[in-house]
Amino acid sequence: MTHTPDDLGAVLTRIAEALERIAPTRAATVDFTEADAFVWHAEERRLEPVPRVSRVDMGLLKGIDRTRDMLVDNTLRFARGLPANNALLWGARGMGKSSLVKASHAEVNEEIAREGKLPIKLVEIHREDIETLPALMSLTRASQYRFVIFCDDLSFDADDTSYKSLKAVLEGGIEGRPENVIFYATSNRRHILAREMVENERSTAINPGEAVEEKVSLSDRFGLWLGFHKCSQDEYLAMVEGYIAHFQVPIDPETLRREALEWSTTRGARSGRTAWQYVQDVAGRLGVSLSEPPAAPR
Image 1 (spheres, one colour):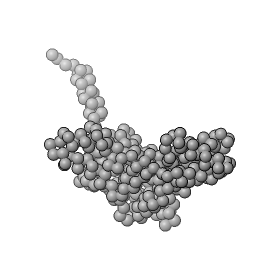
Image 2: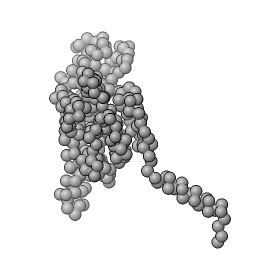
Image 3: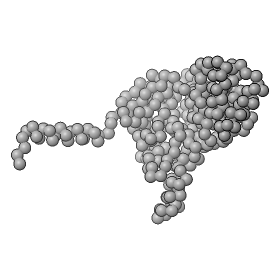
Image 4: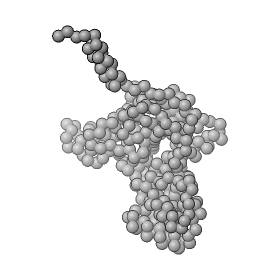
């Protein structure tokens, strides 16, 4: 069968298009002076600046004083070029894990600005994009700035192997983690991996001990573990009162206490998120505008 030049041209065009599709996307350059926070878009290999971060004021985060001080101190040492650890914030939902990361970033930047140092940049990467961490690192490695790479609600389920990419970036790999990068993650699980995922490895692996150890050891790559536990009634009420005072919502203390406790009972939980949801409700009923509200604790 004889092929015409047009046929060959069409074939070559299809081959070129196929090669272009499978070729790795070149990471776009980024101007880090545009903002102090960015979101990583994995498909486009680019960082989108976030002009205004949705964050809670540090003073509104109640019941986590020791945890707050440890994370701020770790972040401040990193910002000053001193040794610091990757951090895993784990535990109860709605207790301010991600809020603390963002508040610490703001507080540390205020501190180092007074010292005449460059601000650190907060970069959020989505859980499903963890496998693209090496591409993100290539963007940050050569920069004069220092970066906190942040992944909210990090966890891995059965048949998910992307955790290996995270392990390599955190500590292993031929290049290792850049000196100007630190990794913070929040998770509801202390060991990040689902229990059934670990148990499945235990029951099916040729060497169960080694298989389980490989998966559980992911959390060991985080030198700093910060636990968040369900708050007490007094801590919950302190959160509510803090929001009420901050936004100057006119409600008498006895009514506030009674309604706030009833609200938490109907929700079946006491947390920073529950406290903020109640404050939104009472402010709406009283016709009070919560201008520039802080993000609900997570």
